[in-house]
Length: 170
Image (cartoon, rainbow, N blue to C red):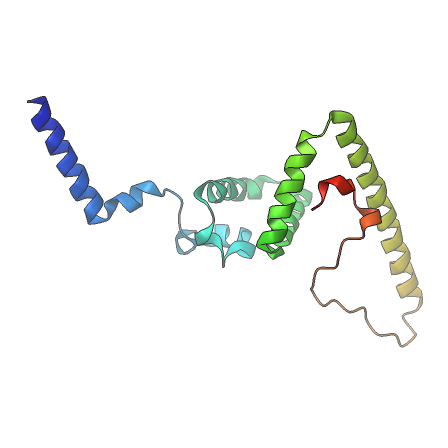
C-alpha cells in the first residue's frame, strides 16, 4: 500500500512538473513586468537586468523597495544614488567591488578602522574642493567659460585617494 501511495505521489509530481506549474512555485519573486509601478520607479536603474538577477538579490531589493517610502529623504537619496552607481558598473567592476568588500571584512578591526578614517578624511577634502570649485564658478559666471564636460564614463581611480590599501586591489 505504501509503495502504491509513493508511486501515485511520484506520478502526480511528475505530471505537475511537466505541466509547467512548478516554475511558478520555484520562483516566488516577480518578473519586472509583474512589479507594481511604485516598485518599478524605485528600482528603475535595474529594469534591463531585473529578470536575470539571482532570486535572493531580487528579494533583498524588493525588501528595500518596500521600506523606501518610510525612509528619511537623505536615506532615499542615498539608496537611489547607490543603486544607480551599482547598476552602472560593469560585471567585472561589481565583482571587484565584492572581492574588495570581502577582503575588507576579513581585515583586523584596527586596519578596517584606519581605512574608514582615511576614507572620511578624503571625503572631507573632496567636499571642500567641490565647494571651492562652486564658489569659483559662481564668481566667474560673467566670464565666457565652457561648462565642465561630463562624458558619463567612469574615470580611473586615483590610487593616492583610494581608501582601500593597495594589497586589496587586483
